[in-house]
Length: 174
Image (cartoon, rainbow, N blue to C red):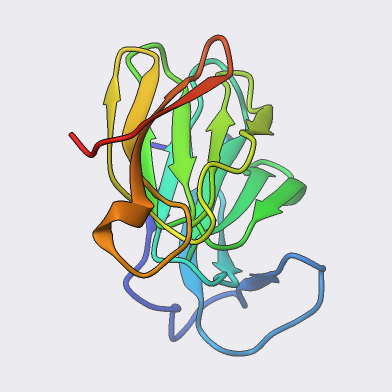
C-alpha cells in the first residue's frame, strides 16, 4: 500500500504538507493522506478540498502517480517526490470505476474521464445544473440531466458513450 487516508492530521511528528490548487498555504484541516515512499519513509499531505462531496484516493496500475480527490478537487501526485503534477475539477460529487481501469467523475454539469495513464478529459456540458441517477453500463454513462425549467419534465434521460464521446438525450425519463 502506497497511501493511507487519515481520520485527521497527525498531532505529532513531522509537519504535514499543505496541498492546494494554486500552491498557496492553508491552515485548516482538509483531507489528510499519508504516503509511503519506497525507502520506508512517509509524509502527510493535507489536501485542500473543493466544492463537491467526493473524497477518494486511486492508485493507478503500473504508474507511480496517485489521484487524490478531496471534496471534489482533483490532484494527481507523485508520492515519492510529493510533487503535484496536475490539478483539475473542483466540484465532483460522484466517482465510478470502469472495468478497464478508467474512472468516471461526475459534477453538476458533466463528466470527466480519468484514463489508465492518469491523463483526463472532460465531456461536453451534459446538464445545465444537475445530473442524477447516473449509472455505468459498459462504456455508457447514463442518467438524468437537468436542462432548465421548473418541473420534472425538465429532466431528460441521457447516455454518454465514453469511447465515442457521443451524447444522446431521450425525451422520457427511464
